[in-house]
Amino acid sequence: MPPRKKLKIVDIKVSCSNCSLADLCLPHGMDMEDVNALDQAVKRLPPLQPGQHLYRTGDPGRSMYAVRSGCLKTYCTTEDGDEQVLGFTLPGELVGLDGLNNGQYVSNSIALETTSVCNLPYDQLENLCQKLPALQRQVMRIVGKEVANDQKMLMMLGKRSAEERLAGFLVSLSARYKSRNLSATEFNLPMSRQDIGNYLGLAIETVSRLFAHFQEQKLLTVNRRAVVLTDLERLKGMVEGCQLGESAIS
Amino acid sequence: MPPRKKLKIVDIKVSCSNCSLADLCLPHGMDMEDVNALDQAVKRLPPLQPGQHLYRTGDPGRSMYAVRSGCLKTYCTTEDGDEQVLGFTLPGELVGLDGLNNGQYVSNSIALETTSVCNLPYDQLENLCQKLPALQRQVMRIVGKEVANDQKMLMMLGKRSAEERLAGFLVSLSARYKSRNLSATEFNLPMSRQDIGNYLGLAIETVSRLFAHFQEQKLLTVNRRAVVLTDLERLKGMVEGCQLGESAIS
DNA sequence: CGGAAAGTTGACGCGGGTCAAGGAATGTGG
DNA sequence: CCACATTCCTTGACCCGCGTCAACTTTCCG
Image (cartoon, rainbow over all chains, first blue to last red; front, side):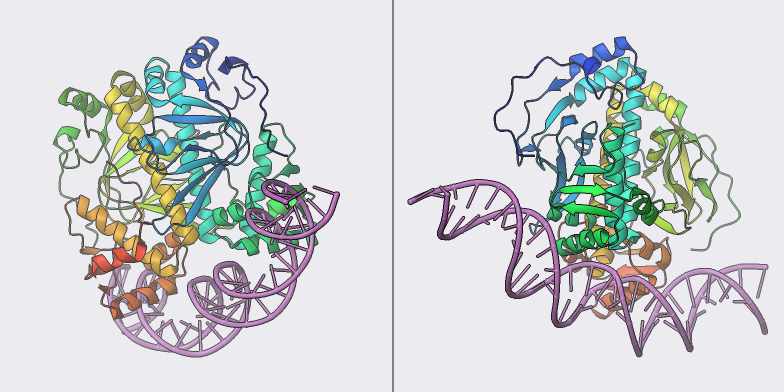
């Protein structure tokens, strides 16, 4: 999956109503009229190249974003420079909620692949919510989902062994791809071992060893970023009710 | 701090406008007229006794709650029965956001002391938000705060040593008490070692040893639940930009 | 007073972090 | 096209922080 430097000309004029993610994204549960109103507020941004930031800590946070394609990594840095990965955002998922706090993003968001996103400015969303109770309810649901997902992640980091963490991570990715009508068992990891380890609170070497270990046990086959989950059920069995979800919408 | 079984007769009629937490809670930044409207929606519940649940996983989640006094513990349980503490809610803080997701609470909330809370039903809050942009903005800020705090906690569990975690926890408590005009250096822990350890992803014995260790280093004195932070600055120094905040407002 | 719950303290061992070396893929310049 | 550097990943060896187990003390409460 080499990054395409040369972009095809794309429709700049897109709308929520014809977006393939419509039933995953905000419009979920809204009628046509409402969706058209939402359309006015949503802007599609030019695609981000790998390594390019969507926003950084301290940037004025006046929008949330919906990922259409690609993958974003959300992370924070401490004063002493090291990084904590907070999550990965796949197509159909939202980022930027933390900007709601006091108008500044607490986290950073960076593209791991070529990534296209829709921009949902808070102020316009706010206005719309005044008029469309359905939208407001949907926004609140998304927010609730975000909170619930963070909580799952806390359980993960607080209690689980390295093995359970990686299994949980893979099961989560699998479920999220599946809900986007992609394969639940074969996919490319958009992120490096470094990012996985950081996210799960593990050393990169541990992640690598675990992949090898899982492979020995015929749970999966892995080659660099390419993963095939050959025994998804058994992987699910390893995490017993501590699955991750993160940033998903439904 | 023994739980008082016998309750004094309290004003059932309370209002946001005369609540001592007004400037920490929802009304923050709203004018008198708006606050009066909010008053209509808020109900004060009879105090919870220690060990009594405010809500449980699976309960219909139609409200968030503001803690007036006491302390709540939020936690989840896995299928195999063990518990993960997600956070503690002190006076002036909110819980119940995770019910927004799909109308059911994902977590449990239980009183650690005698605790009184205000009830903020979502549907009424929703209606009010339609009318009061200031309130909607405030709700969104709170939500953003919640997300940002969960993220800080993730950093904590992902990266920090046992020592840093406990120091961070104490500094967080200190800051939260201080912002409620209580002592930043002397307070009683509302929660057991068990809960602290669970919350921070540590064994109870480790928590106990760390308290002893901190005491040797003249960082604090501790006797069961009673804590005096004798060198708050040095404690702060130990956590360098990975402070907790959780559930705080403003 | 007795039993249970909460907290403390010590001994031991393992999971996973750290350090180090090497391999494989990708990019860069000649 | 190849030489070389760089980044990413893998694998092995070592070892330490913290979990586990166990015994004991203190507090709580009927």
